[in-house]
View 1 (cartoon, rainbow, N blue to C red):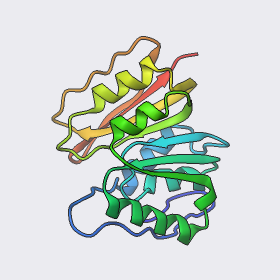
View 2 (tube, helix red, strand yellow):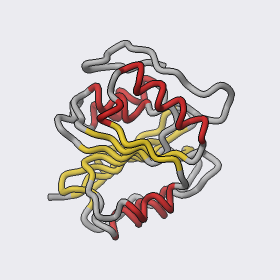
View 3 (spheres, rainbow, N blue to C red):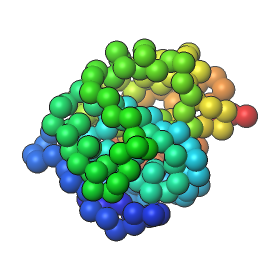
View 4 (cartoon, rainbow, N blue to C red):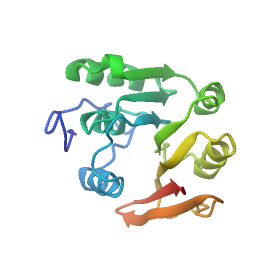
Length: 182
């Protein structure tokens, strides 16, 4: 896996061995970031299921100023730290080991430009987390919630104050990008 654009373009990232995480494919990442406008100048990112940190690190490469990454898997946290160290961006990341629901409750006073939700496919938590983020006004006006989930899953796409920026199927997944309306 690699960074596909920006300051760290073509730099390789380390991933967990085996099937513990499912990295977002390059062409899917490109579609996501193209929908977000390509570059994320000074944006604040929240990556709820960090995995290797690829989405956050891609965001930093494209100009985001900071990303908070959550993951419950300690091995994933170590991989994220290694990738951050290899790119020299440790100061631009807050890496939190813990369950998403506990950590999100601690972050309710913060707002983010982009929130990535790419949980393990066995988890059916997209609707729950979107509702939590919206109820707690954790997305800035004009900000985005980016979701990746199995294309067979039925996910709520209608939230007051949000519009669908992108909804597209890729291989085994579906990408949904919700934009907070101005």
